[in-house]
Every structure is written in structure tokens, then in C-alpha cells.
Image (cartoon, rainbow, N blue to C red):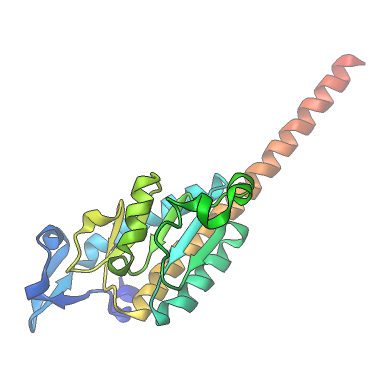
Length: 210
């Protein structure tokens, strides 16, 4: 809570821009600005982090999208934390990237590589509505920072918070990418457990055969 407050995550937009569907996440208003209720933000951020951890642990890929200049280093760093399963888009989303992927990447790349991510995280959803619609068409789950002027239903897993603050984006992307890194560790641990289990079974067969 203190970290979210320090980052300005509670500061929404003007009350005149309040989206009616955001009202459950609004604490109140001050000086004409909607104050976001961080008591709602925290459990939704935890839920999103648990999802990221689970997707990565199951060998899924995560795409971080932040298309403002100040968000480019944020999404790059977040993707790096998730290793080979993390990707990022810091420039403008090209319409058709997912829905027209054969034309974008070519049939060979599309068949040989996983070009459709398993989860997409949007740090600034509104300028990326094309991308969100493509994710919906391709049944890709989405996480997004939603401010008071945004309908939280635009993404599957909303995180109510200030979508204009760089520090807020850094904090939320950091939490989610660290969860992804934990997922990597879980995946490795599970792989090691499976390998040990196979070794034990092989030894039993060897002893039984002798």
C-alpha cells in the first residue's frame, strides 16, 4: 500500500471523466480528481501476479506492452526478468500483428515459433485498443492498468491505478515481472522433480529386471 501511494497510483483523472463502470474502484474525489481505492488495487494486483507466475511456470510466454516513450524502458526491463519467455512492445502496435500474423511473420516463422503470446500485459491500454481487440479475437488473456476514465472491462484482469504515472507503471510491471521470474524458478524446480522421478523409476526397473 505504501509503495503504491508513494508512486501516485491512487491519483485518477478529473471527476468529469469518471467512467461509470469504474465507480466500484473509486474511493472518492479531491480537488476535482477521482481518488482510486487502493484497497481494491492490491488484491487485483496479487491476482494478476499469480496468473503471470502460473503462465510462466507452465512454459507460457508473456508480452509487456507500453507504447509511451517513458514506458519503453519499463517494458524492456520487465520482459528481461522473464528471460526467454518474456517479450515487449514499446513502439506503436501494428494492427494485424496477431490476427494477420502469417502475413506479418511468414508461414515458416508462424509454424516454427510461438508468435501468439499466452498473456499480454498493457501498461497503457487506451492507446492500444487495436491490440486488446486482437487479443480478444485470438482468446489471449489480458492484464491492464485501468485509470478512472477507463471501463475496467476492456481487459480480462484489470488493475485500477494511475495509468499516466511512470513510477506506478514501474511498480506494477516490476511486481508482475518478478512474479514471472518466480514462475521460471517453479518451472525449473518441476523439471528437476520430473527428472528425479524418472531416474527413480529407471532404477526400480533396473533392480526389478536383475
